[in-house]
Length: 117
Image 1 (cartoon, helix red, strand yellow):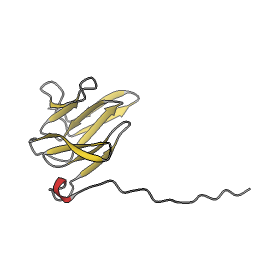
Image 2 (cartoon, rainbow, N blue to C red):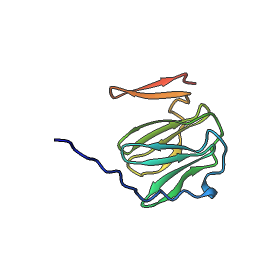
Image 3 (cartoon, rainbow, N blue to C red):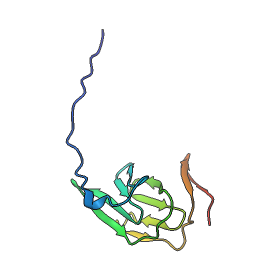
Image 4 (tube, rainbow, N blue to C red):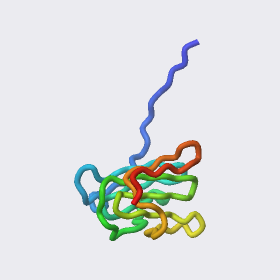
C-alpha cells in the first residue's frame, strides 16, 4: 500500500523588524529541546508562548553564536562572552566561569569546547 502525506501550513512565528536589528549572519535561530532562541549580535531573545522576549541584552559583540543545551540548561558563547541559562531560575546571565569559545558541541553527553579562552 502507498501512503500519501499532505503538507500543511502552520502559523508563522511572530518575528518583527524591531527585534532583528543586525545584518548577516544575524539573527541566528536556534531550535533546542525545550526552547527557541533568536540570537542577535548583542542580545538573545527566547520564544515564550507566542512572542519573542528579550532574555538578555547589552552583550559584547563577537562572532556567530554557538549553543549547547540540555533540557532547560543552555550555554551560549560567541568568542567574546559566555552566557548560561540557569534551569532553576530560568534566567540568563553572563558567566565568569564558563569558557569563552568559538565552537561547542555535545558529543555523547559530553560538552566539547573548541578554542577556549
